[in-house]
Image (cartoon, rainbow, N blue to C red; front, side, top):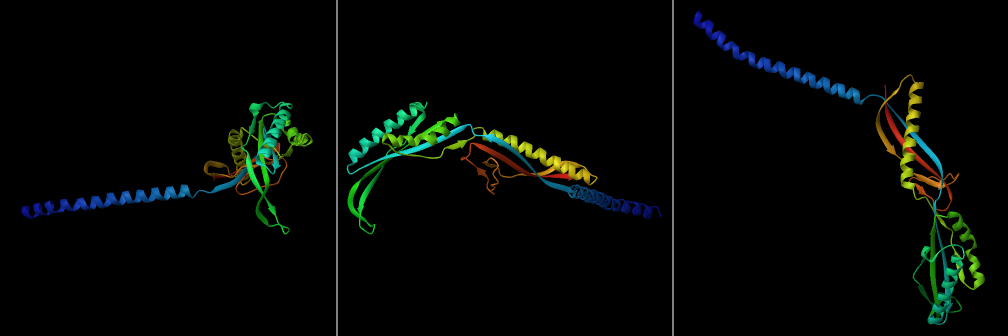
Length: 252
């Protein structure tokens, strides 16, 4: 009897180890499932997505103006001499309006060979003359003076200069910093919109879940132009900059 009892106890002890291991594995599995369920519940919380925007009127603080002049003659030497004379008149004219030589940028001379044409407009191989062209560029933070110059520079025609004035470009030098400011304002607008919508539904907003920045639109003042890739207008002195963001918040 004693021998058989001892064998039963010795054989029963190893059977407890697998049972304990299975119990432990079961507890771990249950904890993992509960944890996954909790995470899934947290991730499935309701969210609200709103679009925020900000708009600001700005004025260009840098202007770029360009003009071109040319000379034409049967002999290239004569055309070049005439072009040099025109360049001197242009420099004198601009100096008289307060633009120093250091503010002027003259391009290289472009040469165009002119050929005679037949009665029906076809070019022949016979050289008729040469046309030389040069451009001048002026950059200034005095945008008002540039604006006036663009309108009045064709007065050079009265001095015998074959001159053409182009519309100025109006630029905003601090645009990068301004974009950061506008992005922050658009985000605040989005948060305020989300909070108001949630409040009307008896809820409140929680943490930020996602945000997506839209393109910036720099347009002439009071313009309705909008593009998917953004606008950076250089034609207007007075401009509007608009920033748009799409933001998602948790609802609690």
